[in-house]
Length: 239
Length: 297
Ligand SMILES: Nc1ncnc2c1ncn2[C@@H]1O[C@H](COP(=O)(O)OP(=O)(O)OP(=O)(O)O)[C@@H](O)[C@H]1O
Ligand SMILES: [Mg+2]
Image 1: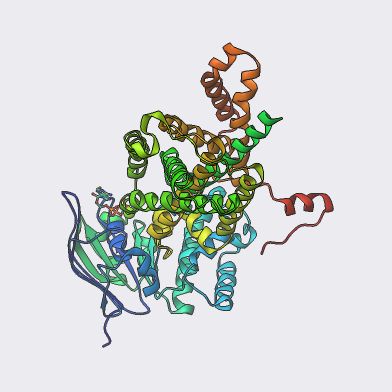
Image 2: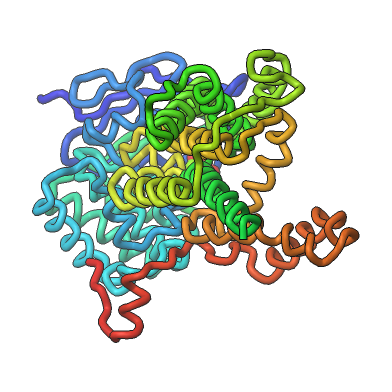
Protein backbone atom coordinates (compact mmCIF):
# COMPACT_ATOMS: atom_id res chain seq x y z
CA UNK A 1 0.00 0.00 0.00
CA UNK A 2 1.29 3.44 -0.90
CA UNK A 3 1.73 6.11 1.73
CA UNK A 4 -1.24 8.41 2.35
CA UNK A 5 -1.52 11.82 0.71
CA UNK A 6 -2.21 13.55 4.01
CA UNK A 7 -1.47 12.33 7.47
CA UNK A 8 -2.01 14.03 10.83
CA UNK A 9 -0.06 12.43 13.65
CA UNK A 10 -0.96 13.22 17.23
CA UNK A 11 -1.77 16.82 16.35
CA UNK A 12 -2.24 19.40 19.10
CA UNK A 13 -3.37 22.99 18.59
CA UNK A 14 -3.83 25.67 21.23
CA UNK A 15 -5.47 29.08 21.10
CA UNK A 16 -3.77 30.62 24.10
CA UNK A 17 -5.02 28.51 27.01
CA UNK A 18 -7.69 26.76 24.93
CA UNK A 19 -6.60 23.30 23.89
CA UNK A 20 -8.64 23.12 20.68
CA UNK A 21 -7.12 19.99 19.09
CA UNK A 22 -6.01 17.27 21.47
CA UNK A 23 -4.00 14.60 19.74
CA UNK A 24 -5.72 14.07 16.43
CA UNK A 25 -4.71 11.24 14.07
CA UNK A 26 -6.12 11.26 10.59
CA UNK A 27 -5.28 9.83 7.18
CA UNK A 28 -6.44 10.84 3.71
CA UNK A 29 -5.46 8.62 0.79
CA UNK A 30 -5.11 9.75 -2.75
CA UNK A 31 -8.37 9.88 -4.66
CA UNK A 32 -10.58 9.65 -1.60
CA UNK A 33 -13.33 11.86 -0.31
CA UNK A 34 -12.91 11.96 3.46
CA UNK A 35 -15.26 13.84 5.72
CA UNK A 36 -14.71 15.30 9.17
CA UNK A 37 -17.89 15.57 11.17
CA UNK A 38 -18.52 17.14 14.54
CA UNK A 39 -20.74 19.63 16.27
CA UNK A 40 -20.07 23.34 16.75
CA UNK A 41 -16.72 24.04 18.28
CA UNK A 42 -15.48 20.47 17.85
CA UNK A 43 -12.32 21.69 16.14
CA UNK A 44 -13.05 21.02 12.48
CA UNK A 45 -12.10 24.44 11.17
CA UNK A 46 -9.07 24.47 13.43
CA UNK A 47 -7.92 21.19 11.88
CA UNK A 48 -8.25 22.55 8.34
CA UNK A 49 -6.54 25.81 9.29
CA UNK A 50 -3.59 23.98 10.75
CA UNK A 51 -3.25 21.93 7.57
CA UNK A 52 -3.37 25.16 5.53
CA UNK A 53 -0.78 26.76 7.78
CA UNK A 54 -3.14 29.53 8.82
CA UNK A 55 -2.65 28.76 12.51
CA UNK A 56 0.43 27.30 14.18
CA UNK A 57 0.34 23.80 15.61
CA UNK A 58 1.60 23.09 19.14
CA UNK A 59 2.90 19.59 18.60
CA UNK A 60 2.46 16.54 16.42
CA UNK A 61 3.07 16.24 12.70
CA UNK A 62 1.29 17.02 9.47
CA UNK A 63 2.63 15.07 6.51
CA UNK A 64 1.66 15.81 2.95
CA UNK A 65 3.00 13.64 0.17
CA UNK A 66 5.39 12.23 2.75
CA UNK A 67 6.83 15.66 3.64
CA UNK A 68 6.28 17.54 6.87
CA UNK A 69 4.36 20.73 6.32
CA UNK A 70 3.35 21.74 9.83
CA UNK A 71 5.94 24.51 10.00
CA UNK A 72 5.33 25.72 6.46
CA UNK A 73 3.75 29.20 6.17
CA UNK A 74 0.30 29.47 4.61
CA UNK A 75 1.39 31.10 1.38
CA UNK A 76 3.72 28.20 0.61
CA UNK A 77 1.18 25.51 1.39
CA UNK A 78 -0.73 26.30 -1.79
CA UNK A 79 2.31 25.62 -3.93
CA UNK A 80 2.63 22.22 -2.26
CA UNK A 81 -0.81 21.37 -3.65
CA UNK A 82 -3.33 22.11 -0.93
CA UNK A 83 -6.16 24.62 -1.32
CA UNK A 84 -8.90 25.53 1.08
CA UNK A 85 -12.39 26.80 0.55
CA UNK A 86 -12.83 28.55 3.87
CA UNK A 87 -15.83 28.41 6.18
CA UNK A 88 -18.26 31.27 5.67
CA UNK A 89 -17.01 31.48 2.09
CA UNK A 90 -14.73 34.52 2.37
CA UNK A 91 -14.76 35.46 -1.28
CA UNK A 92 -13.12 38.76 -2.23
CA UNK A 93 -16.26 40.93 -2.14
CA UNK A 94 -15.10 43.85 -4.29
CA UNK A 95 -13.60 41.71 -7.01
CA UNK A 96 -15.75 40.21 -9.74
CA UNK A 97 -16.50 36.51 -9.97
CA UNK A 98 -13.96 36.24 -12.73
CA UNK A 99 -11.27 38.09 -10.77
CA UNK A 100 -11.90 35.87 -7.76
CA UNK A 101 -11.26 32.83 -9.90
CA UNK A 102 -8.11 34.44 -11.28
CA UNK A 103 -6.91 34.95 -7.71
CA UNK A 104 -7.40 31.24 -7.13
CA UNK A 105 -4.96 30.58 -9.98
CA UNK A 106 -2.58 33.21 -8.61
CA UNK A 107 0.44 30.90 -8.48
CA UNK A 108 -0.10 29.27 -11.85
CA UNK A 109 1.68 30.43 -14.97
CA UNK A 110 0.34 28.16 -17.66
CA UNK A 111 -2.40 30.35 -19.09
CA UNK A 112 -3.78 27.63 -21.30
CA UNK A 113 -4.22 25.20 -18.44
CA UNK A 114 -5.78 27.91 -16.31
CA UNK A 115 -8.26 28.72 -19.07
CA UNK A 116 -9.18 25.08 -19.36
CA UNK A 117 -9.88 24.88 -15.65
CA UNK A 118 -11.86 28.12 -15.79
CA UNK A 119 -14.09 26.64 -18.44
CA UNK A 120 -14.43 23.45 -16.43
CA UNK A 121 -15.56 25.42 -13.38
CA UNK A 122 -18.01 27.43 -15.46
CA UNK A 123 -19.45 24.24 -16.88
CA UNK A 124 -19.75 22.80 -13.40
CA UNK A 125 -21.31 25.97 -11.99
CA UNK A 126 -23.16 27.67 -14.86
CA UNK A 127 -24.49 30.27 -12.43
CA UNK A 128 -20.97 31.59 -12.05
CA UNK A 129 -20.63 31.98 -15.78
CA UNK A 130 -23.81 34.05 -15.94
CA UNK A 131 -22.43 36.24 -13.17
CA UNK A 132 -18.86 36.42 -14.38
CA UNK A 133 -18.62 40.20 -14.09
CA UNK A 134 -20.74 40.60 -10.98
CA UNK A 135 -19.01 41.66 -7.76
CA UNK A 136 -18.62 38.60 -5.58
CA UNK A 137 -19.96 40.44 -2.54
CA UNK A 138 -23.32 40.80 -4.26
CA UNK A 139 -23.76 37.08 -4.98
CA UNK A 140 -26.25 35.05 -2.99
CA UNK A 141 -24.91 32.83 -0.23
CA UNK A 142 -25.14 29.73 -2.36
CA UNK A 143 -23.43 31.38 -5.31
CA UNK A 144 -20.65 32.62 -3.05
CA UNK A 145 -20.17 29.06 -1.84
CA UNK A 146 -19.84 27.83 -5.41
CA UNK A 147 -17.36 30.59 -6.07
CA UNK A 148 -15.32 29.74 -2.99
CA UNK A 149 -15.10 26.10 -4.09
CA UNK A 150 -14.29 27.04 -7.67
CA UNK A 151 -11.67 29.54 -6.53
CA UNK A 152 -9.96 26.89 -4.41
CA UNK A 153 -10.11 24.47 -7.33
CA UNK A 154 -8.43 27.03 -9.59
CA UNK A 155 -5.09 26.48 -7.89
CA UNK A 156 -5.43 22.87 -9.13
CA UNK A 157 -4.50 21.32 -5.80
CA UNK A 158 -3.85 17.67 -5.10
CA UNK A 159 -5.90 18.04 -1.97
CA UNK A 160 -8.99 20.24 -1.76
CA UNK A 161 -10.13 21.25 1.72
CA UNK A 162 -13.78 22.25 1.96
CA UNK A 163 -15.09 23.81 5.16
CA UNK A 164 -18.85 23.42 5.51
CA UNK A 165 -19.94 24.00 1.93
CA UNK A 166 -23.57 23.42 2.92
CA UNK A 167 -23.59 26.12 5.61
CA UNK A 168 -26.73 28.22 5.34
CA UNK A 169 -27.72 26.90 1.93
CA UNK A 170 -31.07 25.59 0.73
CA UNK A 171 -31.29 21.78 0.34
CA UNK A 172 -31.66 21.88 -3.43
CA UNK A 173 -28.47 23.88 -3.81
CA UNK A 174 -26.69 21.66 -1.31
CA UNK A 175 -27.40 18.78 -3.62
CA UNK A 176 -26.00 20.67 -6.62
CA UNK A 177 -22.87 21.58 -4.70
CA UNK A 178 -22.30 18.06 -3.41
CA UNK A 179 -22.83 16.67 -6.90
CA UNK A 180 -20.15 19.04 -8.12
CA UNK A 181 -17.79 17.88 -5.38
CA UNK A 182 -18.26 14.26 -6.44
CA UNK A 183 -17.78 15.23 -10.07
CA UNK A 184 -14.49 16.97 -9.30
CA UNK A 185 -13.35 13.97 -7.31
CA UNK A 186 -14.28 11.42 -9.95
CA UNK A 187 -13.28 13.13 -13.20
CA UNK A 188 -10.23 15.01 -11.96
CA UNK A 189 -9.22 12.42 -9.39
CA UNK A 190 -8.83 15.24 -6.89
CA UNK A 191 -8.61 14.19 -3.26
CA UNK A 192 -11.11 15.94 -1.01
CA UNK A 193 -11.24 16.54 2.72
CA UNK A 194 -14.72 17.73 3.52
CA UNK A 195 -15.72 19.28 6.84
CA UNK A 196 -19.45 19.19 7.45
CA UNK A 197 -22.22 19.51 9.97
CA UNK A 198 -24.64 18.09 7.47
CA UNK A 199 -23.48 14.56 8.29
CA UNK A 200 -25.98 12.76 6.12
CA UNK A 201 -25.12 14.63 2.92
CA UNK A 202 -21.42 14.32 3.62
CA UNK A 203 -21.44 10.60 4.43
CA UNK A 204 -23.44 9.89 1.30
CA UNK A 205 -20.62 11.10 -0.92
CA UNK A 206 -17.61 10.24 1.26
CA UNK A 207 -15.50 7.12 1.28
CA UNK A 208 -14.56 7.42 4.92
CA UNK A 209 -15.41 9.68 7.81
CA UNK A 210 -14.01 10.92 11.10
CA UNK A 211 -16.14 12.25 13.90
CA UNK A 212 -14.44 14.62 16.31
CA UNK A 213 -15.75 15.98 19.58
CA UNK A 214 -14.09 18.73 21.61
CA UNK A 215 -10.81 18.31 19.79
CA UNK A 216 -10.57 14.54 20.11
CA UNK A 217 -11.34 11.68 17.78
CA UNK A 218 -14.68 10.24 18.67
CA UNK A 219 -15.19 7.72 15.93
CA UNK A 220 -13.87 6.81 12.51
CA UNK A 221 -14.76 4.39 9.79
CA UNK A 222 -16.13 3.74 6.36
CA UNK A 223 -18.84 6.19 5.39
CA UNK A 224 -21.34 3.37 4.83
CA UNK A 225 -20.74 2.06 8.32
CA UNK A 226 -20.95 5.47 9.95
CA UNK A 227 -24.21 6.31 8.23
CA UNK A 228 -25.88 3.27 9.79
CA UNK A 229 -24.17 3.64 13.14
CA UNK A 230 -26.67 4.21 15.93
CA UNK A 231 -24.63 6.72 17.87
CA UNK A 232 -24.03 8.79 14.78
CA UNK A 233 -27.67 8.63 13.84
CA UNK A 234 -28.65 9.86 17.27
CA UNK A 235 -26.12 12.64 17.45
CA UNK A 236 -26.00 13.96 13.92
CA UNK A 237 -28.67 12.54 11.74
CA UNK A 238 -31.58 13.39 13.99
CA UNK A 239 -33.05 9.89 14.18
CA UNK B 1 -1.68 84.98 -9.46
CA UNK B 2 1.26 84.03 -7.32
CA UNK B 3 -1.16 83.10 -4.59
CA UNK B 4 -3.04 80.83 -6.93
CA UNK B 5 0.06 79.08 -8.21
CA UNK B 6 1.18 78.56 -4.63
CA UNK B 7 -2.12 76.87 -3.90
CA UNK B 8 -1.80 74.76 -7.01
CA UNK B 9 1.66 73.72 -5.95
CA UNK B 10 0.40 72.74 -2.49
CA UNK B 11 -2.44 70.76 -3.95
CA UNK B 12 0.06 68.85 -6.10
CA UNK B 13 2.04 67.96 -2.99
CA UNK B 14 -1.13 66.84 -1.25
CA UNK B 15 -2.12 64.74 -4.24
CA UNK B 16 1.13 62.80 -3.84
CA UNK B 17 0.48 62.47 -0.11
CA UNK B 18 -3.09 61.30 -0.52
CA UNK B 19 -2.47 58.91 -3.39
CA UNK B 20 0.40 57.33 -1.47
CA UNK B 21 -1.64 57.01 1.71
CA UNK B 22 -4.43 55.54 -0.35
CA UNK B 23 -2.08 52.78 -1.48
CA UNK B 24 -1.59 51.79 2.17
CA UNK B 25 -5.02 52.44 3.67
CA UNK B 26 -7.47 52.27 0.80
CA UNK B 27 -5.96 49.76 -1.56
CA UNK B 28 -4.05 47.42 0.74
CA UNK B 29 -6.37 47.92 3.71
CA UNK B 30 -3.65 48.58 6.31
CA UNK B 31 -4.49 51.36 8.70
CA UNK B 32 -1.64 53.87 8.87
CA UNK B 33 -1.99 57.00 10.95
CA UNK B 34 1.51 58.34 10.49
CA UNK B 35 1.68 59.79 7.03
CA UNK B 36 2.73 63.21 8.32
CA UNK B 37 5.70 61.46 9.93
CA UNK B 38 6.97 60.08 6.63
CA UNK B 39 6.27 63.43 5.03
CA UNK B 40 8.43 65.09 7.71
CA UNK B 41 11.26 62.60 7.27
CA UNK B 42 11.39 63.34 3.55
CA UNK B 43 11.03 67.08 4.05
CA UNK B 44 13.85 67.34 6.56
CA UNK B 45 16.30 65.00 4.86
CA UNK B 46 15.59 66.58 1.47
CA UNK B 47 16.01 70.04 2.96
CA UNK B 48 19.22 69.03 4.76
CA UNK B 49 20.64 67.95 1.44
CA UNK B 50 19.69 71.30 -0.02
CA UNK B 51 21.21 73.30 2.83
CA UNK B 52 24.37 71.33 3.60
CA UNK B 53 25.31 69.02 0.77
CA UNK B 54 24.02 70.16 -2.58
CA UNK B 55 26.84 71.14 -4.95
CA UNK B 56 26.26 74.58 -6.47
CA UNK B 57 27.46 73.62 -9.92
CA UNK B 58 24.52 71.28 -10.44
CA UNK B 59 21.44 72.78 -12.01
CA UNK B 60 18.51 73.24 -9.66
CA UNK B 61 16.37 70.58 -11.21
CA UNK B 62 19.13 68.00 -10.78
CA UNK B 63 19.51 68.98 -7.15
CA UNK B 64 15.75 68.76 -6.70
CA UNK B 65 15.79 65.32 -8.24
CA UNK B 66 18.53 64.15 -5.84
CA UNK B 67 16.70 65.73 -2.92
CA UNK B 68 13.48 63.94 -3.88
CA UNK B 69 15.41 60.69 -4.15
CA UNK B 70 16.82 61.21 -0.66
CA UNK B 71 13.38 62.09 0.69
CA UNK B 72 11.91 58.97 -0.87
CA UNK B 73 14.63 56.63 0.35
CA UNK B 74 14.83 57.88 3.93
CA UNK B 75 11.05 57.80 4.34
CA UNK B 76 10.92 54.35 2.75
CA UNK B 77 13.62 53.19 5.16
CA UNK B 78 11.56 54.53 8.05
CA UNK B 79 8.67 52.62 6.52
CA UNK B 80 10.68 49.40 6.62
CA UNK B 81 11.61 49.94 10.27
CA UNK B 82 8.00 50.57 11.30
CA UNK B 83 6.31 48.22 8.86
CA UNK B 84 8.29 45.01 9.12
CA UNK B 85 7.62 44.30 12.80
CA UNK B 86 3.97 45.43 12.64
CA UNK B 87 2.90 43.92 9.35
CA UNK B 88 3.85 40.40 10.41
CA UNK B 89 0.86 40.57 12.69
CA UNK B 90 -2.75 40.98 11.77
CA UNK B 91 -4.75 43.69 13.43
CA UNK B 92 -4.36 47.21 14.64
CA UNK B 93 -0.71 47.21 15.60
CA UNK B 94 0.17 49.29 12.58
CA UNK B 95 -2.27 52.08 13.46
CA UNK B 96 -0.80 52.37 16.94
CA UNK B 97 2.82 52.14 15.81
CA UNK B 98 2.45 54.70 13.02
CA UNK B 99 0.61 57.05 15.33
CA UNK B 100 3.52 56.87 17.76
CA UNK B 101 6.04 57.13 14.96
CA UNK B 102 4.63 60.42 13.70
CA UNK B 103 4.96 62.01 17.11
CA UNK B 104 8.40 60.55 17.82
CA UNK B 105 9.75 61.92 14.54
CA UNK B 106 8.45 65.35 15.45
CA UNK B 107 10.10 65.24 18.85
CA UNK B 108 13.38 64.06 17.36
CA UNK B 109 13.32 66.97 14.90
CA UNK B 110 12.49 69.39 17.74
CA UNK B 111 15.70 68.33 19.40
CA UNK B 112 17.96 68.36 16.37
CA UNK B 113 19.81 71.63 16.23
CA UNK B 114 21.37 71.07 12.81
CA UNK B 115 17.92 71.25 11.24
CA UNK B 116 16.82 74.18 13.33
CA UNK B 117 15.07 72.34 16.15
CA UNK B 118 12.15 74.33 17.53
CA UNK B 119 13.23 77.45 15.64
CA UNK B 120 12.49 75.82 12.34
CA UNK B 121 14.70 74.98 9.37
CA UNK B 122 15.45 78.06 7.26
CA UNK B 123 17.29 78.99 4.08
CA UNK B 124 16.17 75.96 2.15
CA UNK B 125 16.85 76.58 -1.54
CA UNK B 126 13.84 77.24 -3.73
CA UNK B 127 13.93 74.44 -6.27
CA UNK B 128 10.34 73.29 -6.56
CA UNK B 129 8.08 74.76 -9.17
CA UNK B 130 4.75 73.86 -10.66
CA UNK B 131 6.30 71.92 -13.48
CA UNK B 132 8.39 69.60 -11.31
CA UNK B 133 5.73 69.14 -8.67
CA UNK B 134 3.21 68.02 -11.26
CA UNK B 135 5.79 65.91 -13.03
CA UNK B 136 6.19 64.04 -9.73
CA UNK B 137 2.42 63.92 -9.30
CA UNK B 138 2.20 62.23 -12.69
CA UNK B 139 5.02 59.81 -11.87
CA UNK B 140 3.47 58.90 -8.51
CA UNK B 141 0.09 58.23 -10.07
CA UNK B 142 1.57 56.27 -12.95
CA UNK B 143 3.75 54.11 -10.72
CA UNK B 144 0.95 53.29 -8.30
CA UNK B 145 -1.69 52.79 -10.99
CA UNK B 146 0.69 50.57 -12.90
CA UNK B 147 1.39 48.36 -9.92
CA UNK B 148 -2.32 48.03 -9.34
CA UNK B 149 -2.99 46.81 -12.81
CA UNK B 150 -0.60 43.88 -12.60
CA UNK B 151 -0.57 40.72 -10.51
CA UNK B 152 1.12 42.57 -7.65
CA UNK B 153 -1.86 44.89 -7.57
CA UNK B 154 -4.31 42.03 -7.38
CA UNK B 155 -2.37 40.58 -4.50
CA UNK B 156 -2.38 43.91 -2.67
CA UNK B 157 -6.10 44.43 -3.22
CA UNK B 158 -6.96 40.90 -2.12
CA UNK B 159 -5.31 41.59 1.24
CA UNK B 160 -7.73 44.43 1.83
CA UNK B 161 -10.59 42.21 0.75
CA UNK B 162 -9.76 39.31 3.01
CA UNK B 163 -6.33 38.63 4.38
CA UNK B 164 -6.93 35.02 5.39
CA UNK B 165 -8.42 34.20 2.02
CA UNK B 166 -5.47 35.93 0.34
CA UNK B 167 -3.08 33.83 2.42
CA UNK B 168 -4.84 30.69 1.35
CA UNK B 169 -4.54 31.66 -2.32
CA UNK B 170 -0.78 31.38 -1.94
CA UNK B 171 -0.22 35.12 -1.67
CA UNK B 172 2.71 36.10 0.53
CA UNK B 173 0.63 38.70 2.30
CA UNK B 174 3.45 40.01 4.48
CA UNK B 175 5.56 40.80 1.44
CA UNK B 176 2.79 42.68 -0.31
CA UNK B 177 1.69 44.57 2.78
CA UNK B 178 5.29 45.67 3.29
CA UNK B 179 5.61 46.60 -0.37
CA UNK B 180 2.50 48.81 -0.27
CA UNK B 181 3.47 50.36 3.04
CA UNK B 182 7.08 51.13 2.15
CA UNK B 183 6.17 52.49 -1.25
CA UNK B 184 3.47 54.66 0.28
CA UNK B 185 5.90 55.96 2.89
CA UNK B 186 8.51 56.64 0.22
CA UNK B 187 6.19 58.77 -1.88
CA UNK B 188 5.17 60.71 1.24
CA UNK B 189 8.86 61.44 1.77
CA UNK B 190 9.19 62.58 -1.81
CA UNK B 191 6.27 64.94 -1.29
CA UNK B 192 8.11 66.20 1.77
CA UNK B 193 11.18 67.11 -0.23
CA UNK B 194 9.08 68.94 -2.84
CA UNK B 195 7.33 70.75 -0.01
CA UNK B 196 10.60 71.80 1.64
CA UNK B 197 11.95 73.25 -1.58
CA UNK B 198 8.71 75.10 -2.25
CA UNK B 199 8.22 76.64 1.18
CA UNK B 200 11.90 77.17 1.99
CA UNK B 201 11.05 76.88 5.65
CA UNK B 202 10.10 73.87 7.78
CA UNK B 203 8.84 73.68 11.33
CA UNK B 204 8.21 70.50 13.33
CA UNK B 205 4.74 71.75 14.21
CA UNK B 206 3.91 71.72 10.51
CA UNK B 207 3.89 67.92 10.72
CA UNK B 208 1.58 67.20 13.62
CA UNK B 209 -0.81 64.29 13.91
CA UNK B 210 -3.51 66.65 12.66
CA UNK B 211 -1.91 66.53 9.22
CA UNK B 212 -1.99 62.75 9.14
CA UNK B 213 -5.69 63.05 9.86
CA UNK B 214 -6.23 65.63 7.13
CA UNK B 215 -4.54 63.41 4.54
CA UNK B 216 -6.68 60.55 5.79
CA UNK B 217 -9.75 62.77 5.37
CA UNK B 218 -8.73 63.46 1.79
CA UNK B 219 -8.77 59.79 0.86
CA UNK B 220 -11.93 59.05 2.79
CA UNK B 221 -13.63 62.00 1.13
CA UNK B 222 -12.57 60.85 -2.32
CA UNK B 223 -13.33 57.22 -1.64
CA UNK B 224 -10.97 54.74 0.02
CA UNK B 225 -9.31 52.66 -2.65
CA UNK B 226 -9.86 55.03 -5.56
CA UNK B 227 -6.83 56.88 -6.90
CA UNK B 228 -9.07 59.32 -8.72
CA UNK B 229 -10.90 59.90 -5.46
CA UNK B 230 -7.66 60.64 -3.61
CA UNK B 231 -6.73 63.25 -6.20
CA UNK B 232 -10.12 64.92 -5.98
CA UNK B 233 -10.10 64.72 -2.18
CA UNK B 234 -6.67 66.34 -2.03
CA UNK B 235 -7.67 69.16 -4.34
CA UNK B 236 -10.91 69.86 -2.48
CA UNK B 237 -9.28 69.90 0.94
CA UNK B 238 -6.46 72.19 -0.20
CA UNK B 239 -8.73 74.70 -1.89
CA UNK B 240 -11.68 74.56 0.49
CA UNK B 241 -9.94 76.19 3.49
CA UNK B 242 -8.69 78.96 1.23
CA UNK B 243 -12.15 79.61 -0.12
CA UNK B 244 -13.43 79.70 3.43
CA UNK B 245 -10.72 82.22 4.23
CA UNK B 246 -12.14 84.54 1.57
CA UNK B 247 -15.49 84.39 3.26
CA UNK B 248 -14.07 86.22 6.24
CA UNK B 249 -12.21 85.81 9.48
CA UNK B 250 -14.93 84.13 11.51
CA UNK B 251 -15.67 81.47 8.94
CA UNK B 252 -11.99 80.78 8.59
CA UNK B 253 -11.75 80.21 12.34
CA UNK B 254 -14.51 77.68 12.09
CA UNK B 255 -12.63 75.80 9.40
CA UNK B 256 -12.28 72.51 11.25
CA UNK B 257 -15.93 72.56 12.27
CA UNK B 258 -16.96 73.16 8.69
CA UNK B 259 -14.71 70.26 7.61
CA UNK B 260 -16.35 68.00 10.13
CA UNK B 261 -19.86 69.00 9.11
CA UNK B 262 -19.07 68.52 5.42
CA UNK B 263 -17.61 65.11 6.11
CA UNK B 264 -20.55 64.02 8.20
CA UNK B 265 -22.89 65.15 5.44
CA UNK B 266 -20.88 63.25 2.85
CA UNK B 267 -20.75 60.10 4.93
CA UNK B 268 -24.50 60.27 5.41
CA UNK B 269 -25.18 60.76 1.72
CA UNK B 270 -22.42 58.64 0.24
CA UNK B 271 -20.61 56.54 2.85
CA UNK B 272 -18.06 55.19 0.37
CA UNK B 273 -16.74 58.64 -0.54
CA UNK B 274 -17.20 60.58 -3.74
CA UNK B 275 -15.80 57.92 -6.04
CA UNK B 276 -16.37 54.80 -3.96
CA UNK B 277 -13.74 52.38 -5.17
CA UNK B 278 -14.16 53.46 -8.78
CA UNK B 279 -11.69 55.17 -11.04
CA UNK B 280 -12.32 57.80 -13.60
CA UNK B 281 -11.02 56.05 -16.66
CA UNK B 282 -10.45 58.06 -19.82
CA UNK B 283 -10.94 55.04 -22.05
CA UNK B 284 -14.22 53.88 -20.59
CA UNK B 285 -15.37 57.49 -20.46
CA UNK B 286 -14.72 57.84 -24.18
CA UNK B 287 -16.34 54.48 -24.78
CA UNK B 288 -19.55 55.86 -23.32
CA UNK B 289 -19.58 58.46 -26.07
CA UNK B 290 -18.52 56.30 -28.95
CA UNK B 291 -20.82 53.51 -27.82
CA UNK B 292 -18.02 51.02 -28.03
CA UNK B 293 -17.45 48.84 -25.03
CA UNK B 294 -14.10 47.52 -24.09
CA UNK B 295 -14.30 43.78 -23.52
CA UNK B 296 -12.28 42.89 -20.45
CA UNK B 297 -12.35 39.13 -20.64
N1 LIG C 1 -9.14 32.40 17.08
C1 LIG C 1 -9.55 31.68 18.14
N2 LIG C 1 -9.24 32.08 19.39
C2 LIG C 1 -9.63 31.36 20.46
N3 LIG C 1 -10.35 30.25 20.39
C3 LIG C 1 -10.71 29.81 19.18
C4 LIG C 1 -10.34 30.51 17.99
N4 LIG C 1 -10.83 29.85 16.93
C5 LIG C 1 -11.49 28.79 17.44
N5 LIG C 1 -11.43 28.76 18.78
C6 LIG C 1 -12.00 27.74 19.66
O1 LIG C 1 -11.53 26.48 19.29
C7 LIG C 1 -12.58 25.50 19.34
C8 LIG C 1 -12.72 24.83 17.98
O2 LIG C 1 -13.19 25.80 17.03
P1 LIG C 1 -13.42 25.45 15.49
O3 LIG C 1 -13.68 26.72 14.80
O4 LIG C 1 -12.33 24.60 15.02
O5 LIG C 1 -14.76 24.61 15.58
P2 LIG C 1 -15.59 23.96 14.40
O6 LIG C 1 -15.59 22.50 14.64
O7 LIG C 1 -15.12 24.41 13.09
O8 LIG C 1 -17.03 24.54 14.71
P3 LIG C 1 -18.19 25.03 13.70
O9 LIG C 1 -18.89 23.83 13.19
O10 LIG C 1 -19.08 25.84 14.58
O11 LIG C 1 -17.54 25.83 12.63
C9 LIG C 1 -13.82 26.26 19.78
O12 LIG C 1 -13.98 26.03 21.15
C10 LIG C 1 -13.50 27.69 19.50
O13 LIG C 1 -14.13 28.53 20.43
MG1 LIG D 1 -15.89 25.60 11.62
